Amino acid sequence: MIQITPQMRILVAIEAVDGRKGIDSLARLCQEKLEADPFSGSLFVFRSRRGTAIRILVYDGQGFWLAQKRLSKGRFRWWPEGRSAHEVARNLAAHQLQVLLAAGDPTATRAAPVWRPVGMVG
Image (cartoon, rainbow, N blue to C red; front, side, top):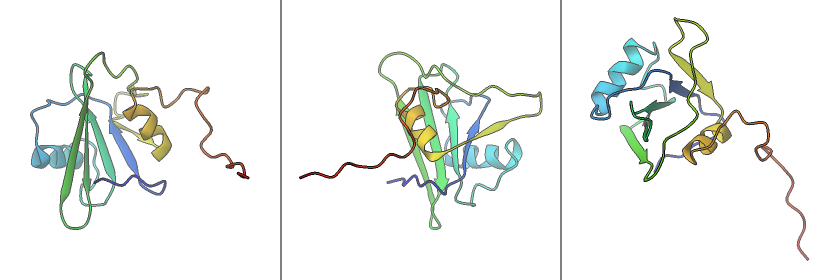
């Protein structure tokens, strides 16, 4: 199981990738295109060309995890765009990744707050 924590660095690749790529190919993309160390413990997020699937690559100290979510209907509507021709990835916070994985827009201002107190029962 991949544990997503608020302290994690989460990088979302702007450019779509071939959905057939495996762990080694995605790790190489992290090094060559994103200029990031795939062994760093950072979480790397990739989107398929059609936008129907998201893949997550992370190293946990013993080995790589590769997870995929493919939507049964529709596409992931939100995906970051490069602000410049040289931008290849965008950082996300853990709560934004959770929204993205639910096929939502992590930049929406009308989303639930990041933290809120839980009322006392009783």
